[in-house]
Amino acid sequence: MVGELVRFKREVIRVDYGHPGDPEPDFRYETVMKVLIVCDGVKTCHVGFLPHHVVARAQEVNCLYGKFAQVLELNNNDKVGHVRKNKSACNHGMASCCLL
Image 1 (spheres, rainbow, N blue to C red):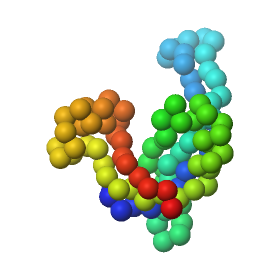
Image 2: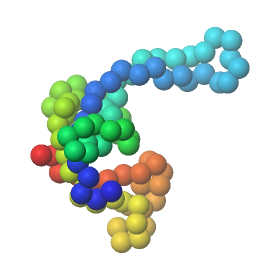
Image 3: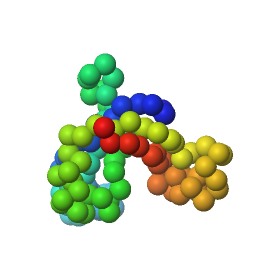
Image 4: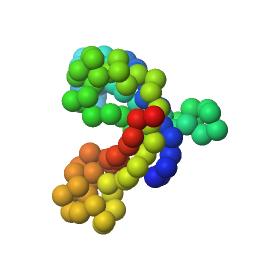
């Protein structure tokens, strides 16, 4: 929601690229940046991930790790225009935020 406080957390997760039922699954370990909601000073749950182009740069990952941000705008409503709304739907949600 707009106004929520979030925190960025670096994690390494196992991503399975194989097909269901494949006897030899194809998986890789990838670094991701989780977005966690902070409520009353406690990290509650993760609500998404930063885009891959941000995580691909180690300098940006190190810069954002552990930082807080406040959500300024969600791009899933009609007010942002059809291009941003479609991109948000394609990416399963997008938001604009400000680092604190």
